[in-house]
Image 1 (cartoon, rainbow, N blue to C red):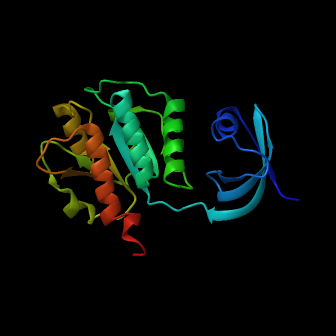
Image 2 (image 1 turned 120 degrees about the vertical axis):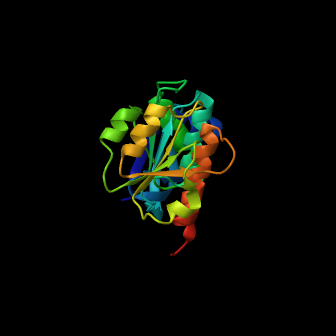
Image 3 (image 1 turned 180 degrees about the horizontal axis):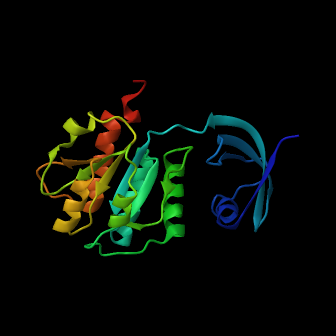
Length: 229
């Protein structure tokens, strides 16, 4: 007997009211555990939708062990970071609270919704983990000694492309807020032996731009954009 799945809440509303599915329609499911599955609608009600699982289409994808540690930004700008980091294939998104952050809270339900919708859009079968925001001092105190921490320092560092290829995963990229890191924070970061100061070019980038550009660069030279290497 084929397995059945019942969807409720927003998922059921989207399928029945927005997509206007009817019994017999095909739907693609992703459970973030086993991968992607083809299913067929057996019941489409106002409050719930029942699906019959037909076959597995793709297994749960492997992604590079790369974290994006990004300082909190204004809501719409941090939404962009969440969305693009998901599309680019990061394994974990760690929001960071620094002294110059204009925001110190993150709506986790909204963040997970943004990530889920981005994953659906780009056909990811593995959602990135979105961690609770943490203060920079706490992040550095508990930093794993086996993970390189690429630190995008607006005051300078070695060219990113040069340094990225010198460290195999696991790795992470730390991006500051709108106003950048202050002197004490910068010193604390550089005191970590895992920290690798890098520059993302001659221009001053917005926080969201730096996060996206730095992640894309890492994926291109050390991540899964290299194909079968």
